[in-house]
Image (cartoon, rainbow, N blue to C red; front, side):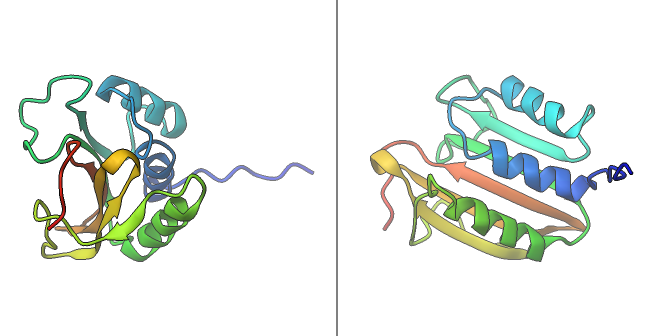
Length: 150
């Protein structure tokens, strides 16, 4: 007897795509979008914001953020998003260690989780989960090399 295939919901697709792709360096916006569409379908069932100024220009990117990967999707799924994010960050290779939040970032209204992470080669990242209006967001920002946390 065949087991019925259950389609992923948009939040599940967004969380899976975020965890499997947003922590991988060396991707352009077109590459990550294509990889996410391969996983989740076209068009994406969630919104993606991505840039990596070390690979290609991003005129609207703030100077303090070299790379951003963010997914947003309808509904309040912050508890699940935090759980899957923490699982991903603890899975080898572990995504850095917790450090003080750099002065480039702060909690905003709707923030459920925000923390700084010390990465290899002196890099710093910030992971952030929360609600904006009625949408859950999951983001990871990487700061330029040499950025110091005060």
